Image 1 (cartoon, rainbow, N blue to C red):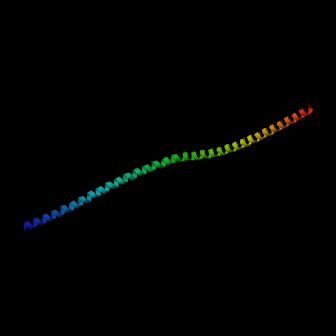
Image 2 (cartoon, rainbow, N blue to C red):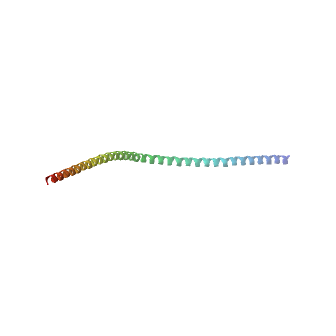
Image 3 (cartoon, rainbow, N blue to C red):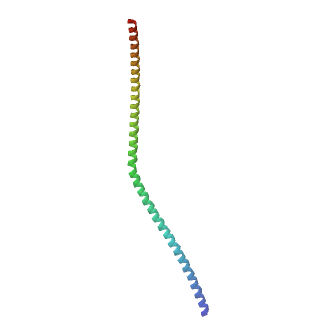
Length: 122
């Protein structure tokens, strides 16, 4: 009966060893899972920090964007004014050219008529 008892003990020890192995394996996989989670949490924290940095950068960029928009608006307005002035000057130049042409024509006419008069006097 002693050997039978010994066999039962051996079997129980074997079962306990197997159970221990399962528990250890479970523990190891839990540890791995925990490590993975910790890693994920760190990465998430890193991403959150990067996001914060980006947000503060964006806040710094916004006033610059506003300034740029203002400058562009001013530039467009100045450009429109410049165009207007250019057109005005160009029309003034055309008027002057016309006046000069008219004066030249008049001078030529008066020259021609005074030549005629001179011819008549002779």
